[in-house]
Length: 237
Image 1 (cartoon, rainbow, N blue to C red):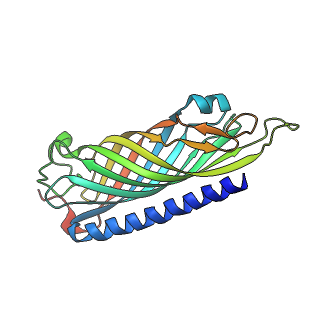
Image 2 (cartoon, one colour):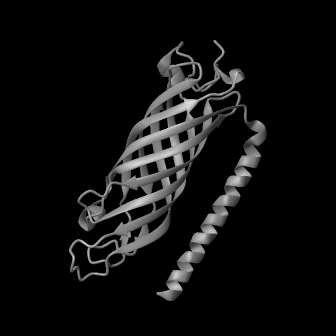
Image 3 (cartoon, one colour):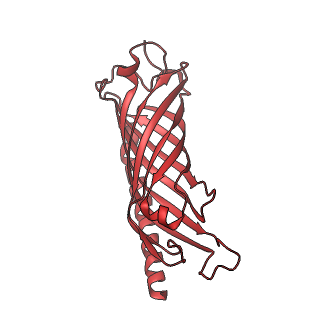
């Protein structure tokens, strides 16, 4: 168990170092190409689906909130949305729940306005809403998650309470519609689905034993609020 713990810790540190280097390199590479940028807040209610978590009495539904920095290339409606967020599931009557810190790298395409004849997101209330505002987004990412399991009874004979931690990969997709409410603010209803990589968790099973979680998928429904601070980045009507 000691060797395995050291091996897992080393893997996590390697993943963290690699992700930091990749993110820094990507930002340095794209920096000269950046033309339009905005800051956004994203909040979603998530609905989880996992037979393993159902059997283990661990909550799956909760809340995800993130702050984004959005930028795009000058000529095409391809937008990049790196974000940092916090996610947790509501414990309720369950004996366990998840909390996570997420780093996501969203890339959105506006299929009906790919040529990019405006400075979007849709900061003006004028124009064709669907054409200018509808997008599809691919969202890969990495997450540092914590699983907390509590005793279900005062004299529970299992090894609870237990708290275990893991790095997991994420891959997700979303669809949304940018709606300009003023020249500076855009509100975006969104629907998303995210899958997590397979991982082993201490305390996953009801008796506190280690188990593999490989079927956790969650859907999200929520809103993004985007703010454009600079006059020169507004839509040209």
